[in-house]
Structures are given as C-alpha cells and as structure tokens.
Length: 417
Ligand SMILES: Cc1ncc(COP(=O)(O)O)c(C=O)c1O
Image (cartoon, rainbow, N blue to C red; front, side, top):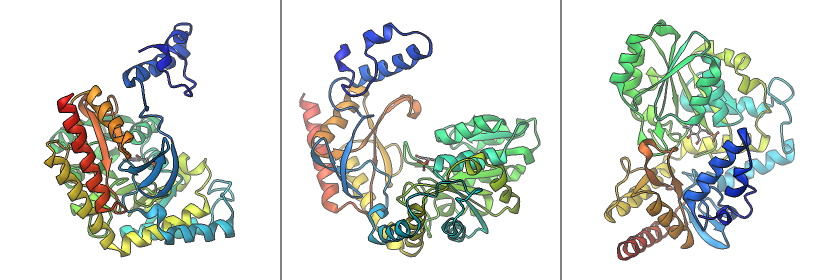
C-alpha cells in the first residue's frame, strides 16, 4: 500500500512522514500506518461516518440508506416516542446539562429517582449511577479494591474492567474464560484472604456473543468467601424473566454482590450504574473517583433512561420480539454455511477466513446498504477476524431477509472470484 492510502481526512501521518518522527510520536504514527496498511483502499471500518439516523436501525452512510446490524439498540428504545417525550420535557425544564458533579450542584432529583428505579428493577436496596458504563466499572472496581487486595477477572473482560483493575492499585490476574476450575485454583493459591478478593466477570461477552458462566463462577467464588461483581452491560433487557440479564437467567442473583451495567445499549442513552445489596457499598459515593470527579448525567438522559427502564420492566413482549428476530437472523446465517462464535442470540459474530475475506465482506455489505462491525486482532480472542452483528427489536423481518440475501450473494461472488 502506498502513502496515498492513508485516509485523506484522517490527519494521520503517512508512512513517509512517520519515518521522520521519533519517540512517542513515531510509535503512535507507526500504529496508525499498520492499521491503514491492513485495511487498504476503500471505506475504513474505524472511520465510518453516519450522516443521518432516522430510526434505531436505519441510517444514511456515504450517501446510502443503510440498515444497521451493528448498533447496541437491542430494543429500539433510543427512538421510542415515550423516551423521546420524557427527554424533551426534561430538556425544557432542566436545560441541556447538569454542569457539575453529584457532590457539587449536579445532584438533581432525577438522579436519585433513576437510582431508586434501577435498584428496584434489580430488586436490590441500593444503586449508584455514573456518567458512562466505563466509569461505572472504574467506580465500582476502584471503589472496592485497593492496594493489598486481589482482583481475579475473566480473561475476556471488557477494557473498562481491565483499566479499572489497573487504576485500583490492587493486584489483578485473569482466569481462563468461563473456567470455574481455573478460578478455583487461583482462589486456592491466593496469598491474601478470600475476604480481600474480588472476582469480576460479564453476563454476556459481546465479541463472540457468548454467555458468562455466571452461576458456576459465582458459586466457586462465594464458596471461598470472595466478592463477585458482574458486568451486565449487554445482558440488561435481553436475558432473564425480568430483563435483568444473564445473572437472572442463570438464577445466580443471590451469589452476586454487585451488578454493573450501562444505559448506552438496550436503554438507548448513556450512563452506567452499580446495584448492590451491601450497605457497605454506599461508601462508593465517597470513594469512587469516577463518581466524585466528573459531571453528572444530563437531565434529558436521566429522564429518558427512567422511561426506558420502566418499559424494559413492564413490556416483556419487546424482549420476546427481539429473540424471535435474533433466532431468525442466526438460523439464516448458519443456513448459508457460516459458523457463529456462540449460541444464537441478539449479539454474535460470524467467523471470517482471515483479514482479506473479513474486509471484503464488510465492505461488500456496506456498499449494498448493510452495516455490521468488523472486529480484528488484537480486539478479538484467538486472533480471529469477525463480522460482529447485533439484532434489534426494531428490525423488520424484511430487514433480516435483505441481510441474508446480500450475505448469500456475497458468498456466491466470493466462491466464483
Ligand atoms: C462489558 C462492557 N462493559 C462496559 C462497557 C462500557 O459501556 P459504555 O459504552 O456505556 O461506557 C461496555 C461497552 O461496550 C461493555 O461492553
């Protein structure tokens, strides 16, 4: 690939320019070059610009009407008229932003109401909200663990969990993905008492779309007396009788000390939360820097999140509709001969045979008006190249059939190329 392959508006130095740099700038520019080189000519998976969204799954990209199979709007609530109406009302009454942290003047009645409602939704006495899901992990994990403690986390955990482990000052080690035996061994070999160990895992791992072995892992951790924190960022609204996630689905809620999650996926806005039954965790409000030292959520976001959580709790038919569509989508993909990384569900990944096929299919879909996520190493376990998809209750059957038709055409074209 020549220097001209650097995206024209990326602002990134070209390969030739990189050679002139040294130190930190050279390292950063070299990384940019590697990414540009591997992507080649054409649309760039890291720089897709959406020019317009007019439903949870319909957008305009590169001038083309595009059906989105790569958002996290699982229930379509970001365009639900009731969520929009509550946001509009709050916007007019409270203005655009909170302009301060909760501990300054940014502690509004809506924040307390949202905390009460998310705690009630989980059937727990207490909740703390944060400005993003990333910060909820930072706040919960750094609020709990400190120097001298040990955090054991699933090897597939999200970057926000790993960054939180780093920032906590505790010692942290991964256990093998979904492997209770490995976790048990690490707990037994730990040199700190179990009461100073936090085990962190996820309900749904969103790269492969596989479920966390929440119950099995939590049983192992609780049998030794460790604390258990589960991130249900992708599980909220999708799994469990009441939509509380994989922890609920597996009947493991009594084994979990704190659930962390986000309002940025099924809830359709932004923000994060930590719910717990431990009165001791009230101290998160005084200890979590990600709570103390940042502005609180804007009122319109809070209002919309409250409405969305009410809908998730009271309209299980929305979840049922999502599942019917997800099963149709996954059955169709498998029918075309592709392997999914996990059991069928609303989030999943189709395995590609390497980068060339992955980029080719990703671009082929985009050029025909379908958006999915292209995931490449090092963001993927096992160095796989994956087309990651998400299905929404807002998709129509026709959207899914169109996707399958295009995937089928691309498959035939790839075979004959
Ligand atoms: C498991 C997990 N935790 C936390 C986050 C961060 O959430 P947010 O985007 O709301 O900051 C994500 C986002 O993708 C996630 O997948």
